[in-house]
Amino acid sequence: MIICSSRHKSMKKVPLCILILVVKGLTIFNVFGLTRQERFYPDTFINKVYLPDIHTVLLRSASWELSSPVIETGSEQKLELHFDDLSATRRNFGYTMIHCDANWKSSDLSPQEYLSGFGHGVIRESSSSFNTTYDYMHYHLTFPEEDCSPVISGNYALVVYDEDDPAKIILIRRFYVTEKTVELSARIKQPPPGEFRETGQQVEFSVHYDIGLIRDPLNDLTVVIKQNNRDDNALTLKKPTFSQPGQLEYTNESEGIFPGGNEFRSLDLKSIKYQTENMAAIDFQNPYYHVYLKTDEDRGNKPYFSKTDLNGGYFIDREKSDDKHTEADYIYVHFSFAPPTLYSGENIFVTGAFCEWAVNKENKMNFNPDKDCFEITQLLKQGLYDYCYAMTDPQTRVTNENLFEGNYYETANEYAIFVYYFDRQHRYDRLMGYLPLK
Image 1 (cartoon, rainbow, N blue to C red):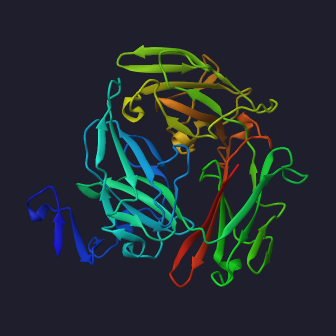
Image 2 (image 1 turned 30 degrees about the vertical axis):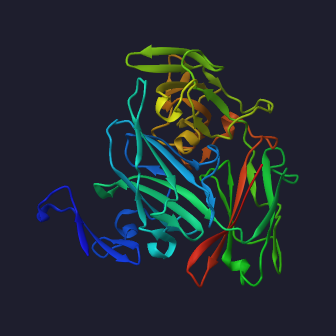
Image 3 (image 1 turned 45 degrees about the vertical axis):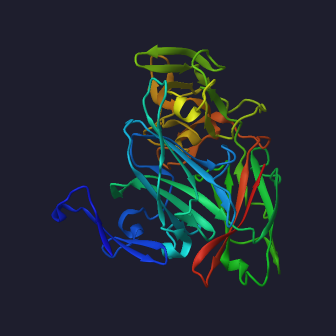
């Protein structure tokens, strides 16, 4: 059957016609003969928000809000998506999932090969903000749901779209569905003597596999290592250092090395009734609150100092609230940073997980000659945040956080190892193993 979806009654004004083919409970969408990926989606799926009113997008495990978005095949594990719409109007949002390869490009599979149910769903949970100066609408989705559930392992992109106009993408978030087909053992160590000895951290690991299941591991296995759940500095390893039937060793002295970095700067916004450690002032400028931070100093050449942090992450919270997701207010936070010297063609940013580690115009700092420092204002929801300062070279576009923050092998970081196997028979990258470690 053919169903035409439109807000107009006239067929001449129908902007989008969706062919729905129902086969044994499966619903497959095609748009004028083109798949959704070909028509609407990017070549590479990244975490991205497409509407300026959408803020504070969180995709975490339903059991732990600081976890990575990873679930196991065949399990009862759930993920939770939270986001706010600052337009404060109630909208109808739908969602679907796209299976991707190890490089986050759409796989060659059709939706019925990797999704059960109808292949799409509706975000039904929404609530208005309560007792806040900044009005917003909060949306919440717990998945997988019966109508849309991944049935194979791999990388997935969760795509939220406008139900009234499915071509209008609202946001994209990456998540993982993993098997336990291979066994992983790993350790984090100080690199061998050389350039990175005092500043780096090296991840060494072994992969144990079934030789009857994986026939050509040297060509069909890909390993990705992530630090602090970041995509921007992930390492991809194609070949092991040593191999023997059933076991691969990744112990090359020059591979798997990350900059140690430093413990992150922290900001506590859980309450606006009192100033926390690095706040200079809290000011209500009708109708919103403004928090002014003390001017941060350079840490690039200071000794390492251990402290507890969120490894660059953040979580939402408001003191003495019944529902932090709808009672936490939005606050204008004023950052200032005074580097020891000024650099030619300065491109200095405040960054962290709160902005997806971006270095763009939205978090680029401006120089204030009267105060001899760089400044920026960010709209943040109440909670606890980690952040750092970075500079991008205007010529090479390479971003350097260590220049202002320091770089030490002692820093406490989190790592995650993802093992992908290209299944030639079924034409997709299986995520056969996942190991988080500290």
